Amino acid sequence: MPEGAGDVLSFVSEVRFDPAMLEKLAGLHEKIRATFARIGASAKLGATAATADAVRACIAELHELNRLESLRLYPVIARQLGTQPGAMAEFTKLRLSVYGVGRKFLRVLEGAVSGVEGVIGAADLCLAATLLERYIGEKQAKLYPLYCAAPRDA
Image (tube, rainbow, N blue to C red; front, side):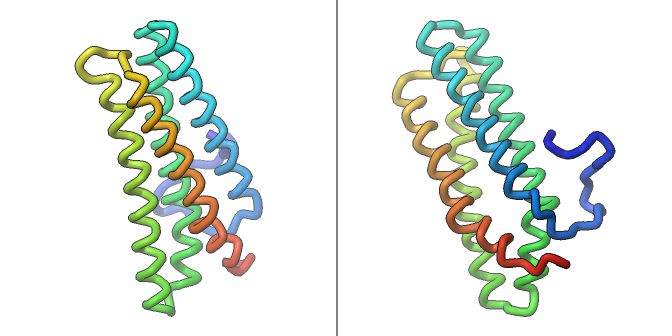
């Protein structure tokens, strides 16, 4: 995890604006993309064990990304929008919409480790690649700017 060894994240952690947060998230995005690339490479070679291992790693990294956002990013945004019910409702809808794309990506990956473990077809790989880029792209375009707009003392 990109957090320091002394940083323990929990639902009771003090949450403040972190100027390095988006950089940390970008690092996790690249890590997920790299792991996903390993899925494609091992699937093309027919290396089912390597594919299954890469799928499990990608799922774990996606959970890590979601956890970091839930504990450190979204509370800062919510605090900023807390006095604006309409804006908060829009943020919530947007967050759920983007999260839904991530869930679809996750379901495609989970399908690769259920049934015949480590077998993922070309169509599923293509769908997963599209979903992953949409998921990351929508976060970067729609959610992360809200974090940037938060007061630095938030």
